[in-house]
Image (cartoon, rainbow, N blue to C red; front, side):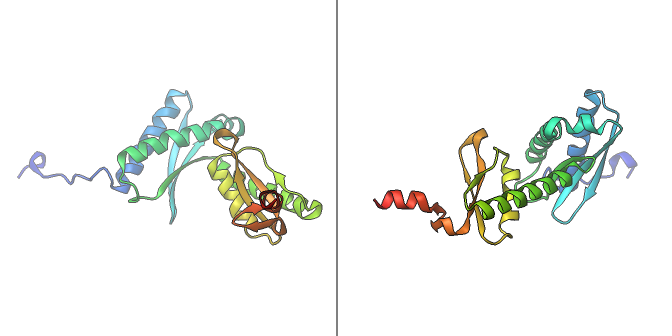
Length: 184
């Protein structure tokens, strides 16, 4: 058997290594088309795979309020989901300059400041609209703070988190004022 006749191992489209490599190559191509000299490093963690973008112009990759890195995340997510079978691989996360970790830390600090404000004023505080991921970070962080609870309100781009004093919640997430209005 010659080298050309040697059967090659064909990896299925749901193979995590193949999906990761395709996502990495796709991201590298997008960055090249944007005129950025960057290297995409794969960092494997237990629950996710990070495509970490290394370049000199990291602010351009992150964009205003993370819009560029979020757009890159969306595109890479589409490529990864097209190439994989749902549930068979870890989530692929696009990051640059440690932006994701810093962003989560800022959200947690915001959640703590607003929770303190709610506890002092005994009044609900509505946060600005945010992405589903950001809302989840806030909900999870506030869950560890006693005396306050959260809920999401609004729809679409206007969906936001409301932090309430725990004693204002009567039943299944219904605030006391609304519960009193429905009782009369």
